[in-house]
Image (cartoon, rainbow, N blue to C red; front, side):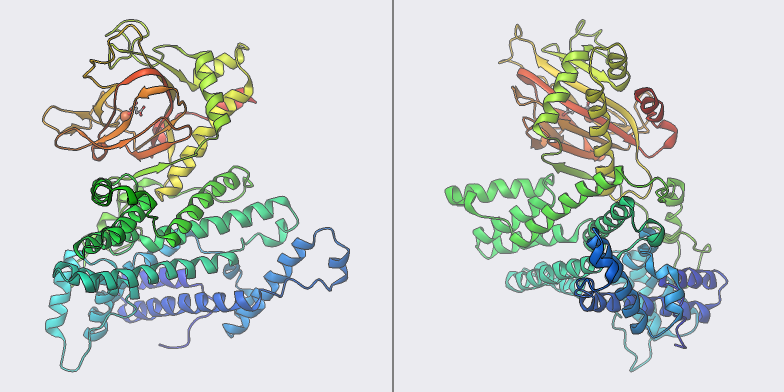
Length: 622
Ligand SMILES: O=C(O)CCC(=O)C(=O)O
Ligand SMILES: [Fe+2]
């Protein structure tokens, strides 16, 4: 490695590397890749140590201006910022650093993807291979494999490279994330039914993973936006700063756990861990691990059946078993962070860049999979890994406050028009289109707006309706880490009421039969993504509002039996269920046998062409 071009941020160096790669200039590509890795590491390390050095720097308030000011906290920020800039400048040994504005700007999330996904090492291994350095190529490929252990192309590539390796040359991965190697050891022990060792490995990998997340979050306090000086004294500055920091914290969790081909490796570990404890005949530990897995993903089938199993096995004592405290704390913080991000998102200055890359860009990413070691295909330009849409699910409680639930229920009562938006021809006026035993009413946004315009309801109710929907939209966009904007496709407030004169006891039907939201479920179990299905719907969510009814559980259905797999009680004000809208999430509603069950039902799309217009609604409302 020659002198590192310190004034170029690491993510630019990466782009340079990709350019050289495209030109098949392998040595130059290698240099840029290595510089970029080195630079990123340097920056992280100096940020962490400067943060601790500057902790007290902002505290003393000796400058006159500061003494006089009502805004001591602003001066704290100014001093902290200067201390950080100086400190990092010194540590990075270059004046250029001070001039490089980019350093004060946190890199765009997108820019981190090649590093977080490890795909950089895929390009690097091929560059080394083409440059004739088999040893380095093997090591880079091993590192890529650590991130992505099931990649068949990488496995074949590795065998090929190993066959070329000369005596004495090593093939260790470079910076294989430490916990990934522990994870792989754990997996090995687990596959050999060696439960004692596997528990050891799982436990250590949990510690390391949590520490990694903590280390990443430590750097978040430094993410100061670039428009620092112009906005410094404004409210907006605070908001922007807070927003940037919050996003940084949630990305630390999401990026660190989405590794090695796992949707959430922390979840995977706890799932294996509980089974290992079970095998060691430690049901209490097994239950604690299962409860922790449940916290991470409450909608997973396996976890739910294990919960039941252990609770039965242990009996009475099972309720007093707690999930792992550190994980519970982390997840609580994450949820609060997402909520705060949503709040600050709403009051961000409109000048801040929020436009996300469009989906078309993502779809091209498939291309990078075609690139085979030893036979390069098309020039790689797409650096974003394909989004995994399969089986996204989330369950959140207290999404709305009690007061908000009551108000939305009131809105439904005041405006609902029988069968609005649904055909009720089948079972008569006002009846549910799904069952003769329930009435069904719905309020579209348009209805709510008209009701306000005609004086039937207050503006506050309409605003709440819009606001609750928007909060939901931002939550899903954030939680599912969507790389392009999520648009509203359809917004509805729906109530199902049990008919009192029906024989509810003997009902065998459902309130809402098993279905998927964007395809037509055929009797043979296939789901056709064709009209009249709402094929553009990509995500769905429901927020439950009322408590005064019987039955009405939401459930995810088993793909082959179509029977409920996971039941979710809906007698909870503010409980939100969100999921991807395809056949991976077949779902339905158990019969509502008494009372009125209301929910805010939202469908979202990634396709801007199907965007349910919000702008004119806002115009009409203002
Ligand atoms: O109300 C519910 O819980 C689910 C409703 C539903 O799945 C739908 O309307 O598509
Ligand atoms: Fe549905």
